[in-house]
Amino acid sequence: MKMMRMVGVALGASLCFATGAVAQDDKPGTAVAIELNAVKSNEASCTLSFLVTNGHAGPIEKAVYETVLFDSAGQVERLTLFDFGALPSGRPRVRQFTIAGVTCDGLSRVLINGANTCQAPDLAANACEAGLILGTRTAIEVIG
Image (tube, rainbow, N blue to C red; front, side, top):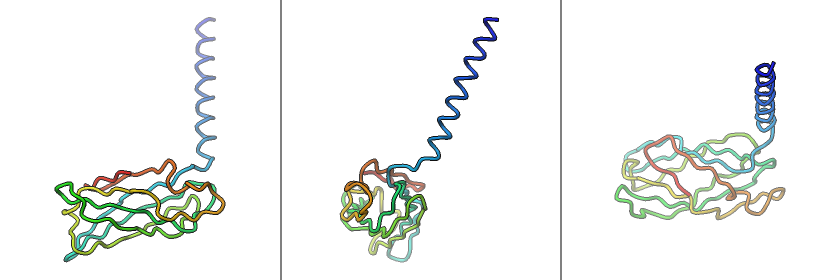
């Protein structure tokens, strides 16, 4: 009898956790996610492809990030602005930026230094930066 009660409590707890997880998946996130998804070297340039998702409940009309590129020696290669444009809520977007004068294997790191522009009238003023989620699927590290 005691064993059946313990199994029942464990089963109930498992169901509570499972229900909570499903409920959390139904809620929109609260951050922008930027992933360096691919890089492609051209003759004298590097094209960076980013997968960006606005996890907020509302759209971002314009997101521009100050971005620092580091060379293979770890030194700042350049400071630039990446305009990710409009980011609809919950819908992934791919944005590409071609960096002239450097090859992809000449880059070691990308630093998202902060939002230069964040136009999102229905969201908090820091919507583009708060909780920013960064990742990479390449050999180039992405930090922020």
